Image (cartoon, rainbow, N blue to C red; front, side, top):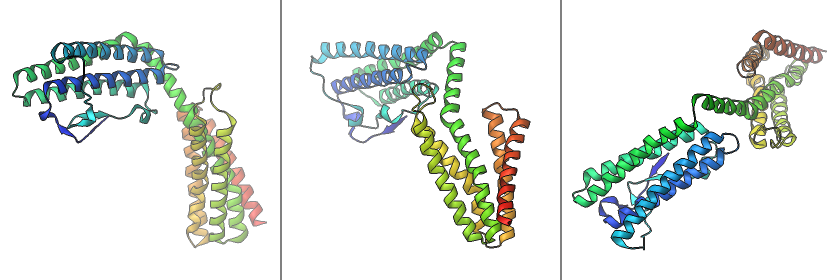
Length: 324
């Protein structure tokens, strides 16, 4: 990812400033690669090693650029950074990219090198000074070498079996952190709120009262499930991931599950609202069965039997209590 900044025009930089800009850019990219490595070190060691090797490549080029600067301009390097130059790309701060997957990090690595290569090629084509044109061309070639080197390192550290293993680990983490808590919330919100909502509906036959009870039950259940999920396990030993993410997934899906069959009672006609609520419940239960089959690998017939039967029993209980 990159953004375009405003500042001094690239065409107005002298050769020393261009060299200083290249040095600072190499330093920044090396830091990004090391941050990637630190982020995935525990769960994806092969990807972490690839990013460390990429950082080492950037260090090598930075050292060569510094040596060239010392020979031509001395030891004092001007402070010229990406954000100081109009039209030069700037990297998104690494702390904003905490949710990137290893594959997204590898994709960004290739894009970082390709972006830099394209910039240097475009800058060289606009330059009329022979030495500056040569310098920019050399930098473009170096970035092209980086891109090829990234592919070589990926092939070295990430053969097909390791890449598949990392993808499986990543998928498992997604299931544990988002799908499992979200599914539990959706089931609780969809099923547990059936009884109070339909009991209220048949007892009062007042759609507005039923709607208010449904909203209260859904929001209350969502808050309760969210806090319970977040407080039950910090994820350190179980490997289930961030408690905040799990709590958010559980709380939101619990609320959504209850709201689905509460919202139809905004309709003033009782039987129209109730029939629509029944249809929504049917869709909710089938959605739960599909998610169980898709992500939890539960046989579809078993998931359907469990969810539909359980939901029908709770719905029937609510309607029976309300009618009494």
